[in-house]
Amino acid sequence: MNGASDIRDGDWVDRLLPGGWRPYARLARLDRPIGTWLLFLPCLWGLGLGWQAARPPVEEMLRLVVLFGIGAIVMRGAGCTVNDLMDRDLDRRVARTATRPIASGEVTPRRALVFLAAQLAVGLAILLQLNQFSWALGTAVLVLVFSYPLAKRVTDWPQAVLGLTFNWGALLGFAAVTGTLAPAAAIAYAAGFFWTLGYDTVYAHQDREDDAIVGVRSSALALGPRTRPALVAFYAVTVALLAAATWTAGLGPWTYAGLAALAVHLGWQVATVDIDDPKHCLAVFRSNRDAGLIVALAIVLG
Image (tube, rainbow, N blue to C red; front, side):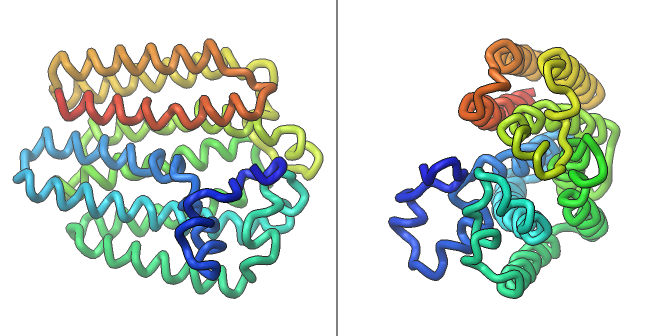
């Protein structure tokens, strides 16, 4: 690890990519895929609920899964580019983020804007492969994508804006399959919102000391020692809402069994997380990939 940086020296980016590509791969966080997973997994929830509702051909579902997977990579990269552009002065003052490509000067703001435009163009090309209702829904989320980097400057709860943004795929995935929305998808979206409040609060504890110094706000700073009971509440609401989505969609007992496994996993997170240990916070945060996969599998088996 490069000091306190969140960029790891000698990883696959350094080994496999040409030198000129590496800063852009790191700007898009291709070397840290957990964010892509957390963006993609609610898409799988929505796709799964849509499949249960409409039962399109398997070939069509596989096509949509691939499109949403590529879209998650591209749009997560676009969101990170927007975030790093807006936060470049703050990032230089935080040890974990000071070596990011824009903050360190490896990528100029102008080149970052060109890279952002290219990512958005790919995202648009993917969106146009979906139905027209999805076009409007997919375009609407851009307001949230561009708002999130500003939220940490004006509210103690930027994690709430992230939750609204990262779980949009639950709505978009359902719409891509069915051409409409339904209560089950909306409830799953709400569940994802509370899930994000939990896992991103854990993530924010990595930076709370630096954030306090530079004036960045977060739920980690707002909650402090009350974080553990807050996580209990966030994750309990997450499981309850997913159960409500399951009931609304008419899914079977295997889904409820999956949600029981999810409750155990989230309970483990709450019981073991050490908010004073940044490395442990990161490990618990990353474990939410497994949490999201449990939900996706439970919906498919339902």
